[in-house]
Image (tube, helix red, strand yellow):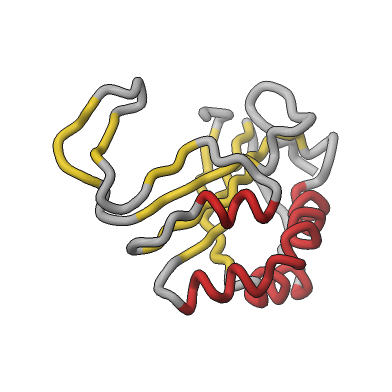
Length: 147
């Protein structure tokens, strides 16, 4: 198996709903969040022109116990970590389904980095569990270890 690192975050968007309560219900603290109509701010907190069109929230799932640059496949294979997170999120299936039904979107944002080609399998169980929760998968791949 080729060595690689990964990061996984839960991200949600909605045309108008406050998403922080959803994350609190799951037991996550958003690392970034805003509501539709709030003034835009830059990464440093300074004001930007305009307001946010949609509500947004994101929280890291892979940071707990991870080293710099995310989790290593040697510490926890990606597939096993993803299964663990889907099991953790499963009790909140009604909340995810409601969000999607009301026009929102929720996804697992997955960042992969490594010095060599990366390969892994997403089993039928993982795909089914992800779909059942109404989660999308978004992959961001960084070859040569560039984060």
